[in-house]
Image 1 (spheres, rainbow, N blue to C red):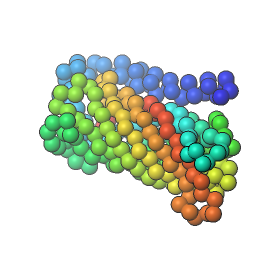
Image 2: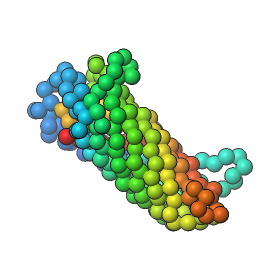
Image 3: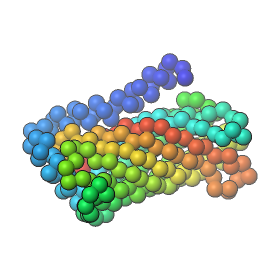
Image 4: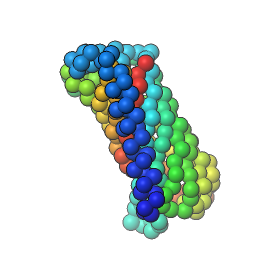
Length: 214
């Protein structure tokens, strides 16, 4: 990776972290301390509430031993709006709720034949909300959507493609309504055989984010 692209990737990672810490410090007076934050987390995951998030990271493609081709590696920058479908339910470590989230993203390819990947994903997320979370709320999610890209058409066949994703992550609350998140994401991009060329892309990588609940 060229030094310029390394610098860009570092800046993309730092942006949500700095934003989260700055906004959390601004709202510190309303937080009420760690105990109050822990006791109020069920309210943040009540059915009908929303979560807005800014996510940033990097994705690295991989291929099977029979697919000898250059990697497609890209930055990831996305905005997300989530909606809590119902209140926190259950007991034990599976206690939690379901959230539906729409995400729009615009990615820059820093290694490989192409310059951009953009599109949208609809996620179904399960939030694990323990009774004594100490500010930590893990989650798992799966989703799918569409992609527009100028990647080599020998790989994806055409500009319009689909994407499927899986992710595991966790949020850490740094204020009453603010949380930082870190997740590990897998993304598959292909055209679902709409074109005779459909090798597709499989990529994975870490995503850092900042969320506001309202």
